Image (cartoon, rainbow, N blue to C red; front, side, top):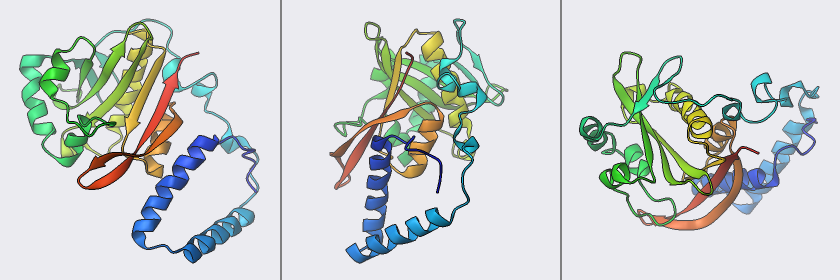
Length: 243
């Protein structure tokens, strides 16, 4: 048996189970199939090699909190990573980019309200003092996407994180994650945020794990919260905070 010792929060387990249930239900699982699945899963867990506990230890950079919470000195734009740069948004220069990036399904969800299915308008987002937008570029300055803080609350010191890689040929390369790490550091150490949260319609296991790797924890699942394209969708709420 694994030596996890119940380290995975119950809320995360519930979110993972609900994500699996939705996918398996659409696949055609009946009650007997769930029984078989649980038995097979337990059998695999029982046969697994004993865990010495090392694999469950946090990386050195996260020993005292999520990676994004470690920076101490104030930081400012532009932010430079190994493969990308995040610069300040320029309305005249960058709004035409969003017109193209938001045209496909991935782009559509970038501005979709997670709690009402209402579509936000990028021009309204860009011109609001409550939002902060960064443009993700390659080292040569070519724009490929964006990271944003929406609904920035200077009193409560919290904001909602959004991200998108708008250029299809730059997706699935880990660039969104790299941009998110830089943007979270900027939020905490540049804007003085104490909490960063996200509301996502993507409640699958992979998405939950990716957000946990960024330092987020599941706070709750709003079940069947929004109606999109004729189907009710869950909204997963995750948060990262600096104590």
